[in-house]
Image (tube, rainbow, N blue to C red; front, side, top):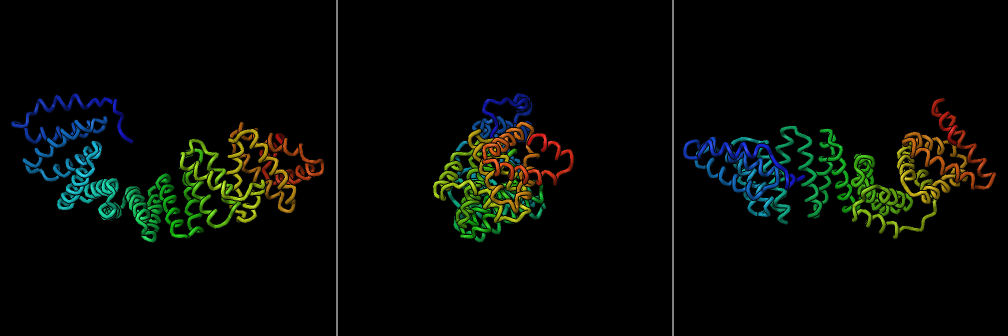
Length: 400
């Protein structure tokens, strides 16, 4: 996130006043240090041009005084200012020089940060051959310091770079480590981003089943309620992986769920719609086909995702989904109680208003079926209800 262009930093006035109190000719160290902090403060409020002037002055002052560590720190921040003003080449050179200085001064964490900045900037310049070794060095240093979140962030950037370059096996190895390290550091969003990139690497290598596992992990690490755009992206990619496996029902379900998320990015929406256009026509039995193909341990997750979609979609779509559910349960009487238990469990996890909407749709759908089918559905649903503790059973019985 960039600082607001209109933000005001209370430190700016104090730092400007301090520069006047410590003229360079009398207080060279204090003046240089103040110039550095002024440059950082100006960057914080988005005034990159003014920050560059301050940091350039501080760099020259530290060089004249011979303060090597301060000079390296200033060079790293000056690289940020150069990048913000659009001088990517100058920024990359400044970051590389700072990294070399930090290495010579035996400052591994500072070297790691400068190398990371250098790698990112080289990537922006379209120089993957320059970016990759800089990112690799940063990753090594963060790993040696046992900083898993930082190591994972570098790994995601480096893995994506390797993927773009077509070095797929290397990308898979780097991204797999990045996912593990992000998890080690408790960074779920970072792990989800890594898992999504890992899935793309597997997909590019023609390993659709491995891609499915990676995208499933990305979906779980990007909960719909917390990160809907990232959830939708992982779902759309999961749909693509299922399509590559020729699992049409799985692909349709994932693509529809991707489109149901809020704030779906345009490219994600387009990808999901294109997948749906390529798949066979909808039958309404896709959910049951997916459940039949998956182990019973996954039913709760699959039903929860679908029921959440039903609760959020339009009344017409919700009514159609409920109609297909009632018909499918009646046709599958042998597994009806288990299916009903899974659906009811998903319903109980919904907020009250969403719960009421979906239950009303299911009850209405049952009432519109022929009398014999409606009775069979109610019987199977009661069998599913009987598996719940009394308080939950009472709530279900009252609303159904």
